Amino acid sequence: SGSESPAVAELCQNTPETFLEASKLLLTYADNILRNPNDEKYRSIRIGNTAFSTRLLPVRGAVECLFEMGFEEGETHLIFPKKASVEQLQKIRDLIAIERSSRLDGSNKSHKVKSSQQPAASTQLPTTPSSNPSGLNQHTRNHQGQSSDPPSASTVTADSAILEVLQSNIQHVLVYENPALQEKALACIPVQELKRKSQEKLSRARKLDKDIITLRNFWKQDVDGVASGPIVLHCAAEL
Image (cartoon, rainbow, N blue to C red; front, top):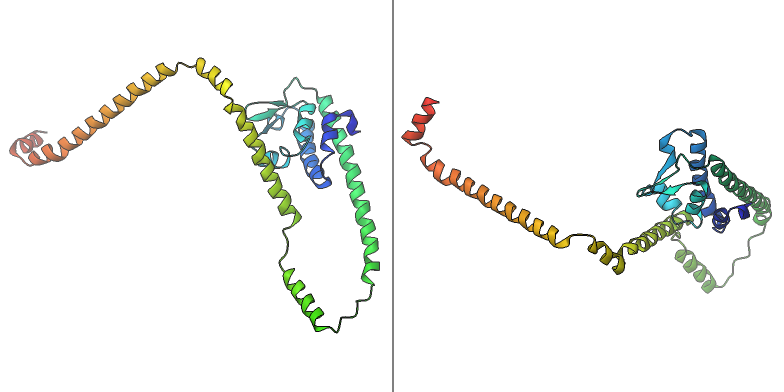
């Protein structure tokens, strides 16, 4: 069924764990729109959203599935516009759901097979320990060397997702470092005029700072010196 959609077929190339996690979020986005077609908040996905940036953006084919559903890329969000076909959204959603169900069924069958084999493995008799002291020492050293637990699969997966997001964002930023595009942009911007205006504003700001400092010194030095004089006291009495 994934062959009916290039994006879904691409999504299926991921590992089972990655596929199941990404497909769950994709189905959530689609189902929210199908259940609440008139609610605007379900028709947009913020690109900076943690769930989107870590669970979909790095995953092969995931964002492409959203585009095939009908989402369009905005400046900060993916938008499902009013003109988009709900039937197309439903079609891609159903294809993802079918692939997800087949993988869940396969995972459950595999789990049952492993569970049925587990008792047989546990009935094996332990091997007779060697009487060789060096062998015992070797076993002890091996046990001590294995005492530290390796990082869990979930931790490794999360770290890999974060790394992929960083690498993707780094590549995206390089789009704006194109010298040819920068020259075209500068050709449309009155650089010299903007520099002249900024210098004028800077000069006015510096002059204002000097005026404020001069006024402060006047109040501190000159006014304080005569504040208790007869003229000031006379004026204060009249007020």
